[in-house]
Image (tube, rainbow, N blue to C red; front, side, top):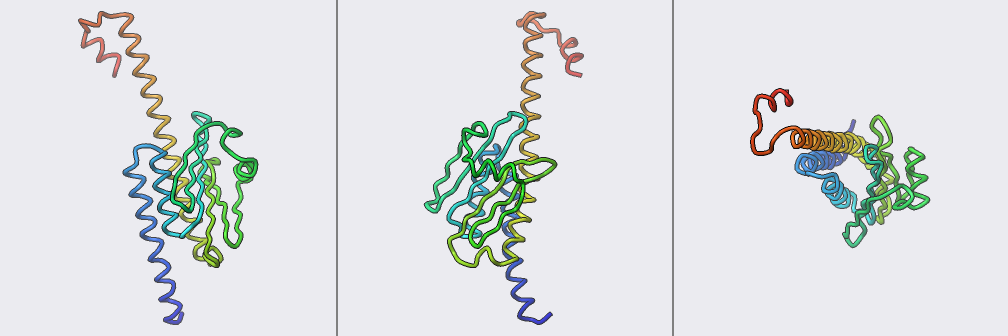
Length: 193
């Protein structure tokens, strides 16, 4: 490998490491899926100088969809709702297709981890930005990272919901069968264990 080619690859890899680091920083500091998605939109917008980015995520637990978009004016819109309510026909086809689509300035990448979680679309104004094989590879690697993180967020929110429901049931049970002013601590500890 000649030195020129080696240096150009090194410069390209300098892009991948900070992007991966930023994604994991957003993942670890975000409390909600919405915060995470908006952070990811900003990272991808700045990394690829994109004009439009859209992320669509399906939560199987609640059977709802989240669609977040960032346009060239850097405004973010987030919609939540049903499949046909927030997705256009073309987006519905993209979700069901589960295939990568690449053109000169547009790319659709499915977010799949164990099942279809959604998809990412990125539209770039500058010519030749997505024609580079390395940039395509970076986007696919990023989409794989996003799929794993999104799945973790969805599992965490499902777990949170289950704990909340359990606490509601225990509270209701204790309210019915014991006095709220005087609670038998031994009995309560047996229920919790």
